[in-house]
Length: 444
Image (cartoon, rainbow, N blue to C red):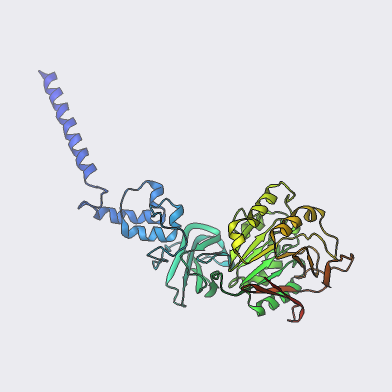
């Protein structure tokens, strides 16, 4: 009898626990369509700093997700975007975010110790980098006016900041400012890549290492020309593994210019394929060698430190870039890298003559820019214009060879400006004082 009572009592307790458990599980229903979504809205605020999809959060909190979606690239985070979204920025109804997505309360503001500076630019995107002296988040405020009504951000605390601003209009100018946990830069400007029928200009120079004061003079001359892009053919510092030299010999001189003008570097031998180099810059593709289109032109940056002989990975990639349908449709093909094939000031590279040069001649490259020797040289061979622009600041080279097709040679600090207007491209070699000491035009 006592055993029966005990059994009934235990059964009643078990049933009561089941009922209580059921009530508890039903009281916090994550379905926003129900009446029990008040608790979700409050609790989900903590989730908004991360991607909801990554934690399998099944809450359909549309209001809070507006913040998440504007702080990350929608197409890389698993969002259920429509098939029509082609990353051009033209078909997104919402456009850039107007929601300030920076969380506050991280304590004292860090110091911005480098940048901001502009990197890879397209018609609808641009990459902006900067560095702080401690880990902090990355926020970019931007807009068509100085009111800076839009935001792009990355909430992960880092010291090296890199954010790609998206959903921009082609051939347009914007104001921007960067912010990290309260530290904020001044307001600067950037422009997106132009349409194919718009004129533009770019500057090429290199070998600015070792003599910062001479480099500063060259950069002053470049700034006065207001180019849309700057290309560098490498040897930006003396020792790529000496981190402090990146500021002393490069960023201290180029900092103001890089705030408003995208820079693309083709690595030189003095960078020594260092970890620091690849962390400080952001280029398309694998960053060892890369290409990009700007206006009516394709630019191809080779890495002459790596194997580029026939059959190598880089050689095959280079040929695929030259023979692509897009390259064929563009008006101009420009190639740049560090080592030249021939030079009056120091010989040249035999492997370039037997591998890269024949490809450029075969596929109609218009101009090839290189450096390594510290002078200016120009010549035309089998339809390709060779330009050596290694006068960016390092001690100058003297004449040591006699290359027949190189018809212009100057041992002076300089840069080369190229103005592209449709089927015409005008090249000007300019010294730091603004003197144009060589000029020529290519027409298609």
